[in-house]
Length: 99
Image 1 (cartoon, rainbow, N blue to C red):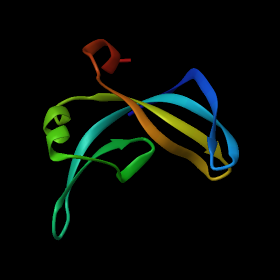
Image 2: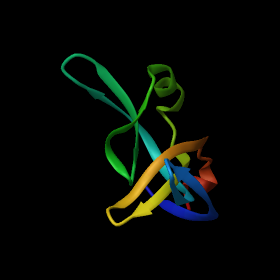
Image 3: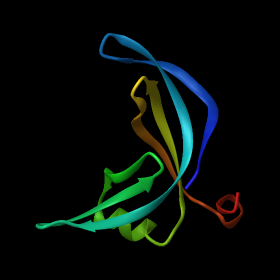
């Protein structure tokens, strides 16, 4: 999995605090994890090996056999990168998956 920084950034607000939001692109795969009472579907990225980006079973069926590119809104802090939102999901083509 890889990540690249886009030149896209802007300022946004969280509560009364003004923050710099940076748009990044990263590769992802879909994973399924069974728990004691249910099944969880999620995006696995370099930012998270845990079920942070939960999706539905229908979304899992659409994306399960594909390498994906996610466009994420993030913010940096002393503790690392925080993901604010998933802005775009693309199925990677052969040429972009080989980069």
